[in-house]
Amino acid sequence: MSTDAERKDAKRRIFEAGVSLFARKGYAAVGIREIARAAHVNLSMVSYYYGGKAGLLSAIIDEAYARYREMLAGTGDDSTPAEAHVRNMVRGIVRFFRENAELGLVGFDSFPPVDNPETMAVRLKWSQEIGGLLSGFCRKLGLDVNDLVQMWVALKLLPVSVKTFFEGIYSVEQSGAKGQLGPLPEFDDEFFERYSENLASLFLYGVTGMTKMSRPRKARSGRRSRRR
Image 1 (cartoon, rainbow, N blue to C red):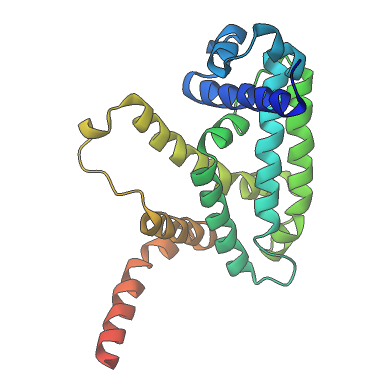
Image 2 (image 1 turned 180 degrees about the horizontal axis):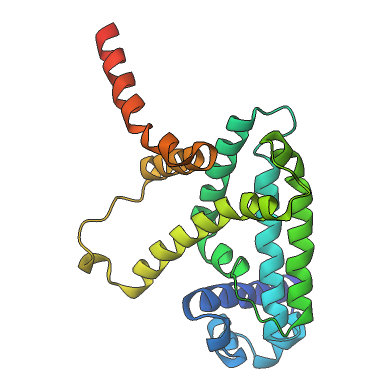
């Protein structure tokens, strides 16, 4: 007879197998048997713990959004200046995808199975909750929270941009084609800090704000040298 710890471990293995397989192959291409095999569990346990493949996807979406909301809540509040809030948010979103790449790619997939009401209900619940969380942030930027077009652009631009970027990195790594694509940047802390700075400037000030960043960087470096 299995213990509580063993049951929790089996449930978590199923969850992690689903995340990895859905990220690499896509939801539609993965079957229950493959999930069970990857998780080293009996086939029936997938249905027992999650009610099937769609229930597993719902659980993945739920966890992805829960972690994402926790990250957003720590990026600022009503007292945080608008620019600082944006830059904190971009860094937070980038950090989220660096730490939860597969979970984020699956949880925020733009094309979930639309024929499953449970999956759509989970996504709708989180969209509404996160939209409410960010309404003050949008007002701070001068946006009209009653303008659905403005809100859609403002709330989707940053996470979708970062997700698309990480999808590209993930695809290259999974394909094994990295060495065939020519020189690529080193995806280290310095790269992602600069990536975050540029994306935040693009969001705040448009392309002109982003392109000005290289000049101040050089100018600041020159000023520091002269002061010495």
